[in-house]
Length: 128
Image (cartoon, rainbow, N blue to C red; front, side):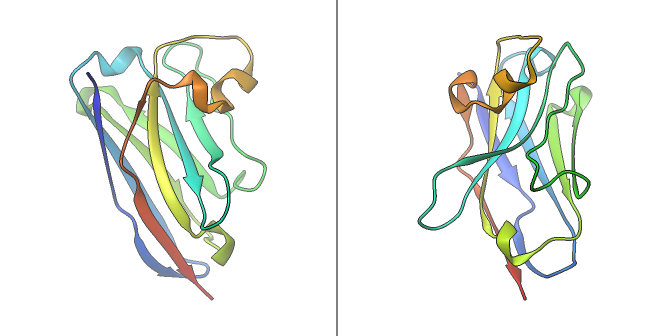
């Protein structure tokens, strides 16, 4: 059973930056697709970004393109989400997810059911 632990959330002013980390224990991290989703109060969980373990694809939600960057360090069993130019609408609980499937279609990586394991989430609050 893979366990995912997120860190790096917090309170930041609009225009600021945060870097989220997601560290995996157990399993072979280098063979997992990693993704970030978020859920704002009263809204459904939505896809933010993903990074494939083998195809090199890194799809992003349109709302974060050009501001957020997903990356991974297989030696550290950790995925990151660098978030720049944060806006109040980015306020949400951010969840890390890991999955073992593969696809040539970027759409596959945006779906929650493509991921087998989920972290507990970390709160990101952006003040205006």
